[in-house]
Length: 467
Image (cartoon, rainbow, N blue to C red):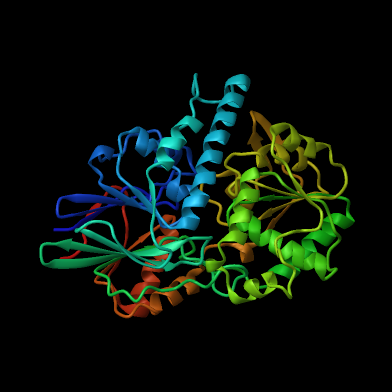
């Protein structure tokens, strides 16, 4: 009998890994790192409960690190099978894994020099040398339509609207004459948002549905994101401050650049220097321009001959590649906007910008996406008066502005909208990628609205795909 094991993203938002077994073969959906609390991060250094050598296939829903960031560890541990992904996801995963390895090595070196790690001899999870063998195992799959991975597994892909290349996956399992269907939502995006097409609900009659629940207990705030962003930029510039935006290099960075360019062209904000402190973000932006198959109609019109050509190109754009160039932004005394990873303030270059900018009340930090439990971003969201950064206590005097309108995850009503479009109720629904309170709230909403069988997935549980 086909079965499914939750190796990640169960009881938490990150670490997406789902093991599907059918007819003696094993397939892994996603292979992400855990982010957030120290307990979750420690899981990244623990061996997978299943021997990677015994996994035959792997398929990715999208490129974010909580879905791809553990791939080099899996390959180092013996996985030798193909890693299937669509072309945009392949290109994004390539730059993400290389950047992740680089940042881990940078952070490890800093921890060794400043002795601010709880480990006597801190080591990166993986290095740049571990990434190349991983990339050689990646194989292309169609952006839409289906692919026969083997006689046991057939996968069909549908646009999830979360980031470039993001997909919901319908997995058909064949055991003898019996076929069962496992549907994986992946991360579901927002409806009526700029750049990307709306999420598509697969026309699937699933035996088992694995659905994300990141915002299963709440809605995104109302309000025009462009107007709210204009208000923040104008008031911070008026008081002579700067804005730091902790942002994922893929997805959120491009959305901010799109709105900033619009506001500049409409003369609703001053043309401030915008520092995108991430070479990866520039590479990702180039891919957003390249992969037009994901663009919605409005964005496509703006790209056309009658439009601006590049709707993401703000007027005073500065890219910083080296660590030295990044640190040089600290010398900028006039108002500016700094967009830098990571989005949850869990690491990366944004940390040294916050060391410099948080103590000044003229400045602002915009939190624009989900902040997982245990991250510095969550601490800022909950009103922390100080943060521990690079072994020092940094006072939080800057304005902390939450802009949930910029989230790339569907809110509760949008998740229910996606579920409503399914042509038939799944025989069983499991909720993942949510903190317990969010997953439980969505479970209650599904039971009330649809009367479906729904359960919150539990870490390391194995369940049947069909009864």
